[in-house]
Image 1 (cartoon, rainbow, N blue to C red):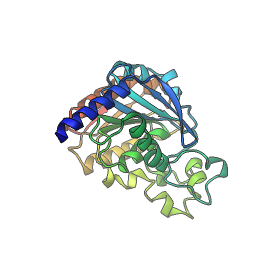
Image 2 (image 1 turned 30 degrees about the vertical axis):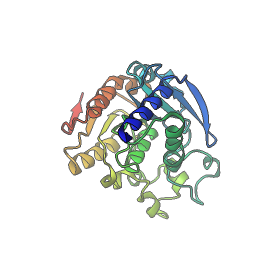
Image 3 (image 1 turned 120 degrees about the vertical axis):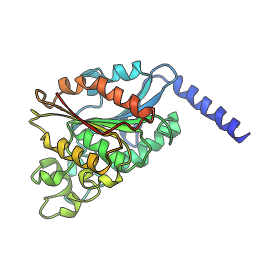
Image 4 (image 1 turned 135 degrees about the vertical axis):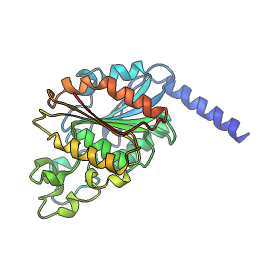
Length: 276
């Protein structure tokens, strides 16, 4: 009887999501776009934008959203803007940056809201992460702080260890100078130093001609997570002709969804490095 009731509730939840229209909702003062496929969804993807990128850019400047709709995924697109996905603000954090959302807002507010309102991002669901630039850092941080809630993540052109960029203005603006606050720079907000918390496979991609975020960030991060967990199915793609732009990110859309499909079937695969 209990199993039968659970099946009915799950079916009703699916119908609720299926009937939804694309909408924008203010979640704790932050605008969030919800895009629905118009059919029974196969899963949900949390899309994390880069530094000061509009949440709408990924849909307007690439084919990612179109492909997600085609493959019947719900998309959740929060307006992160000048966020570095920090877990908290500090006295040294720039005052004009303190009203942007944090990692804690994603985990403690956004995800529970999505569960309650739309019955997505439930444990055991086909949940995925996608981020570009600073949003790729966000993918790693969300993954490290949500155990196995998500099946996999795709992180493109991201930075993962701020200690290797001690003069970075974004990190300094949030955490204060590195030489004064090493505990913050090396703490839980540093995904590259806390890879033991990573429980899901990640697809990393970076252009070697990236003039914004050093390609070494993805190379070093991928080496670490692959060596620590070679059977997880992590993958790294490097492009020798690509920079830090939507031309590159859009070119990886097909590979990202192929990676999601593979991990969605819970096929462990093998860690690999791909170079073009």
